[in-house]
Image 1 (spheres, rainbow, N blue to C red):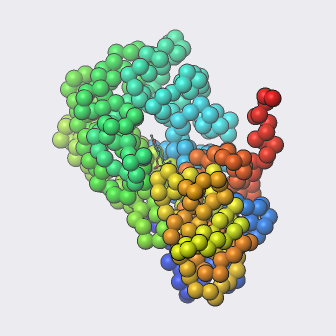
Image 2 (cartoon, helix red, strand yellow):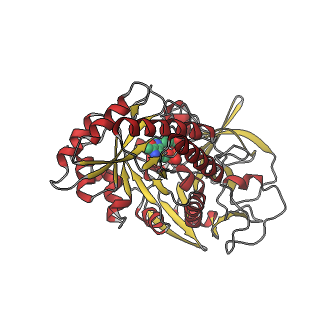
Image 3 (cartoon, rainbow, N blue to C red):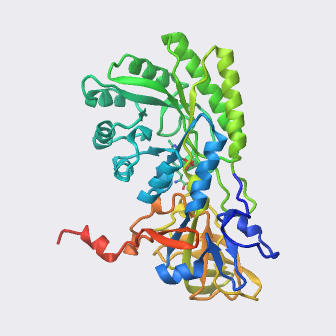
Length: 450
Ligand code: LLP
């Protein structure tokens, strides 16, 4: 998916100056002559003053546009947004209005979506270790599909389905394909905790057992090979293996399963020049492979589902921090900001690199290489290693980090009790709070013992 620089109704023409950095910003981002940047017509410097920092801005139109682009790329398929990337009531509403389904992986995500009015039949529940509460809530609310991730789950789900009804399920299969931006997010091979193996026969075995279970209706198979994948190839390979499985199920059991869920994992660029997954190309290649494979195996083409999370919301988010200190030590310059690993654990967890930008003032100073660090009490609290910022960067300056919409706040922690930042939606020149800042009072309320 590409961002276009001429989104109607958002802003005027771009200045001729260097604008390559805008490639990883929301399409509505516009630099101003005074060094400020606006997103969806909202000045970031003003937003920082009004809402405080650290602050997460979410461009509503960017999210909606990405949903629409997915639906256009995958006509006739189901597109589920993976709520783990970021969930809030407004986000759930946007996803619903844009016609996507939802992938959740806990009773918490499910209940939030349900409370926001999301239709349960468009929700799929995942999880390698679903709690009794997860399963009970899913069955009670009537989710569309539960994805069976281990053999023991088959009887557990069957046991709670009300008499006379059937719960629709998918089986999560490990197709034996290595893909993904980091070892911690590779889920397509047997050496990790998710799914049932194709190689050792556990997937086939589980399918047989589900087919013999009257309380369950097996709708199809699912795989999620990894995350932050920027090439179409591993998906095509996954389709081939999954069609092979569908063919074996047909031979063995005489049933043609009607659905194939290919999971998510679609990669985005965090820094200018980085690759991102070409979603229309993915759709075309997957569709072609599916049609050919099914024709060869004499199967009807199953209904396809994809589950993007990051690629829907990641590029729509911008994090704003205020510089608190600048320290020059030997060879290095540390620029310390008022957030860090409690609002964005991704650099520490996966070594991800970001492209922060100084905004809110003009600077004639030359660029210098710096390390942007957080405010937390450990040396590994680095937000952006070896980045270029004006050499006169100083306390009070604002830093904006693009591509901050996915897996930041959803993975945020209470470390050092600094409180999680608010989320503010921007659209048509207006800003509104979606999730307020976590206060000390919020945190103290849970501390009930003395
Ligand atoms: N479907 C399933 C079953 C998943 O497990 C995931 C992500 C997705 C869909 C959505 O994947 P996406 O399109 O967002 O890549 N915290 C890591 C990413 C973990 C992804 C976990 N599962 C990160 O910050 O990179």
